Image (tube, rainbow, N blue to C red; front, side, top):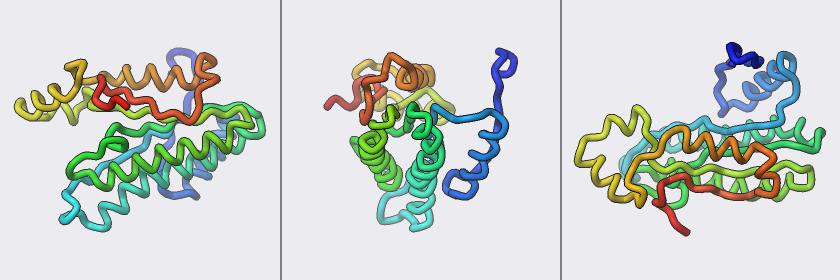
Length: 199
């Protein structure tokens, strides 16, 4: 970003810690100014069948995926409300809509993000702030590249477009939702999944 002539700041923080998010927001405000676009993209998995799932794995996923989204939205939308303009995009997952074996914690966290998105969209609409979610399906990443051939073939059969998504597919939708072309879109969960979820 700096090579492109933009100002940038990289911070490491635990989004499940409200105080850490508040501290990061203060640093960002001091270095870069007011935040008008927020993309909540922090997320983890701790996959396991329900009967084998440890409470700490359930809690860890909810703390990052759901509490982190709450903390960042709560903190960063304050300036948006004062400015009467802002964009929030929550990165969710098709698993939050359709569920998945071994991912009760992850699915619960992402389904909760869907409800959170719609509720906050209603709360902030009067301040000209849109709040939407992008729910990716299976995207070509290091994790999906490690799948064995049989699993990969079965996965591809479940995707009507017959291919994995690219990170750019998700980024393009998130970028659209932050721009002027999406000014009349709020409270939506947009699936970027090659047709896996059609509802």
